[in-house]
Amino acid sequence: MSQSPSFTGERFLPECSGEIWYEHWHRYALARQLSQHCTVLDVACGEGYGAAMVSETAHKVVGVDLSVDVIQHAKNNYRHHTNLQFVTASCECLPFPDASFDFAISFETIEHIEKQKEFISELKRVLRPDGILILSSPNKRLYSDAHDYHNEFHVRELYRNELDELLHEAFPHIFWLGQKLLFHSAIWPENQACATTEYLVNDGRQVALVSHPSVEPMYYIVVCSRNPAMLPTALNKLSLFSDSAEMIYQDYAKQTRRVMELDQLLKNREHLIAERDSFLSLRTQQMEERERLIAERDALLDMRTEQLNERTEDLNTRTGQLNACTEQLNERTEEIIKLNALLSLRNEHIIEQERLHIALKQQIDYRASLVWWLKSPLRFITRALKGNS
Image (cartoon, rainbow, N blue to C red):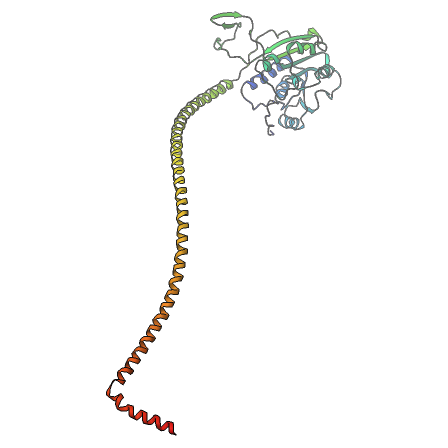
């Protein structure tokens, strides 16, 4: 078996679960009942699971899809079905002769097609005059309008009257079926066949016995033909589809647990938000207090700046005075240096005078002494002799 293509949200795969699984498998289960021993065409067969299911009771089944990769996967995956063939082709131009098939299937295809009228004409062409078409289409009023939902893969969805008008010209005889996933409580005779079926509906507080579900279908399933006698006679019944694994309940339980987990996460988040709000409130108070302190600091800084400016002005004034005093001091210093120079000269002169005075005094003292007087006559004689010579 080859690996299945990836689920894109458009083409159903049998590995999917939940509501979409029940909807798709139920349609093919119905088609399987209606197409026994027929030559069947499955248009837009996708992965091929439905065509393979139908081939178990049909004479021959041909699945057609536009995707080359999907068709190749179908050929590989279901090659053990000898009466099953897969062909790559456009549903708007089917590569088959006229009147080739007894039964045609087109599930969830028409809403993806722009040329819907041409598509229906092509289905009519490849079906035999007594052939049957079973086709499904989402109910636009409930599928999209009621939920304000837009499916990006759908080209043109149809209301019931639009689908009826589209089909009626090619297939004048139509039997309408509705499909929707519903929740029921089932009560049945254990290990016995059900003789009849009753349908109970609770409307408010009133329980009523009704003949069919009173809800609006999510999908329309139409069984149509050009020959009214060929329409199956067993369509006026309630068809229920389930699985032994009860997948929907498993999915529901999983989703419920997930919701409970999300509720707990939401409570935890609300608790964290409350703590965060409390913390933010505290931080806000702290920020307000900080802003108040900053304002006080700025005011004090402005006052200190003003005082500093005043002191700077006073310092500049005193610096000017100091510079003036320095100039005066320098002048006085120069005068003192000059006076010191004069004083030095005076001191030198005084010293010289004192030295001369001392020498003179010594000379006077010498002359006043007896030696001088004794030597004086000799000096006079020496001078006289020098003068005569």
